[in-house]
Image (cartoon, rainbow over all chains, first blue to last red):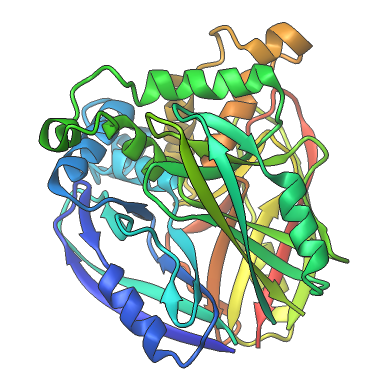
Length: 138
Length: 138
Length: 138
């Protein structure tokens, strides 16, 4: 059994982290599927999905890691060629990955208590984003 | 068809790498499902899942990469706020990701010969961990 | 319903990026499954899977990120022990991850327009690679 749902969010860019755990829980509960997996996928090449303990200290620490590891202010061939100024956004998104798969039983996601599902929007401007939930199971 | 299994392990923390390939193989074989995927998921926000050629040289090289990329001894807002001392553990876990999906056919995981499934526990202390296996297929 | 397909590719190594989007689309269309997920998995411990806007500037930027983050020319215990010279390849592959899960509906992958599926071969020599597609759904 397969149920497809979509979540729309607005992001501010530059590693804006959006907690979508409540929406994913609601859609799984509402899907009528008891046990299986939900694949959380973001279309687009400048955002990623992961889990984090969603508190402001770690949100800042996560952003700091990206600023050190894949800096904004170094030359990118993508920017030289297309002038988008978001070469770093693309590279960060490819490293993090655009998806997450979470198992559930009894219609309940098997997340830890301090483990939230987040969208990381790395683009260099505000965006409207659509996240696909592919809920599969029995 | 969906079968849920759990594996319990004990870890030493600070990027302790635990090879769980044998347990995952056993649970897939024992599930009664012939072909499909196993989603390996760790609840919690300071550990991750990946694959590696599990030999002591690479275990050390993988740990060295984390020490360079997401160092312990720099300031973390998480530590300043909560005093846990494991800000680096959280950031590492979010970058690596808490899950892996491996396909199988004829009840056999389609891993390479030198490709083992590992839990990376990044926390700063020994932990007991539970890994969920969501085995789906037909 | 589960359909297993395989894609064979030849790679040049050292972060060669191969766009396999067209092949994955074709196999999903041909599978007879209308809605579900395709798990793209590479057997082996020196390659990974991700998505990227596949244009030559970003291919170069992605390679540059790996050269900075997990450099070739630093000592690796793996190389000291086994003399393979590909310690960096293994570490990069473990960080990126060997798999991707993409949802589809109406036999169509829910990728963004500028989001291609790529194999990143990090090994230090040309390789023949086989990628498994596990297509599941209804």
